[in-house]
Length: 226
Image (cartoon, rainbow, N blue to C red; front, side, top):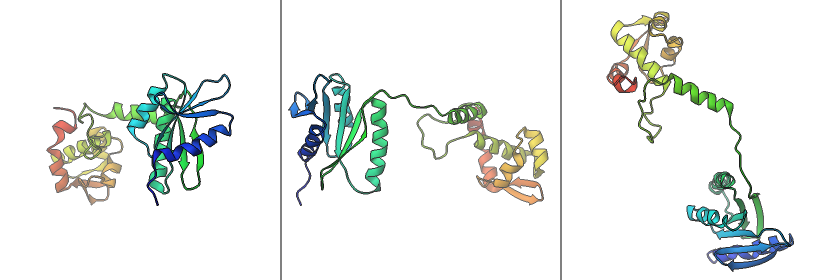
């Protein structure tokens, strides 16, 4: 079996567009494919075997010529390509580009999105969650661009406040910890013990684990007090 080439995408794309009444020619100017129908603006298609940043750059450059620009790639089987197709189609929508795939084994052409202006719907729930976390976060304890590992959230800051209190006061009832720290969900945080910092001493009474005592040493930076 011969290795696929970009030129293998052209015959199916040409036939697909001709079936819709376009006159199609390849390698016109800088464009891989140009299709014209009556007095309509031209359609430009850029061909690549797979998605790449270079392909998106090419298509964005073609938007200087026409609003109807598609990127076309060879379709592959499997979840990996399906995931890539979904993500790159979403990106193409945001850039005002169309996406076409060609299944080379049988020349099946599929249009996954057409070019056009994109206005994403905002999620009020996600926005509220973002602002809630922002408001609860003390200081600015993280470094912009860091990975999720070790990220300091408002929940982690609350857990550390509880650890500091228990470090200083010793084992205490959950209600007392909540009252003294101002963290209403103190008992739940200690009971869930997400970070392994707390130990249940008795019913409703919690103390600090060795891991919790070690965590207290990080409080200046994490609690936004440095």
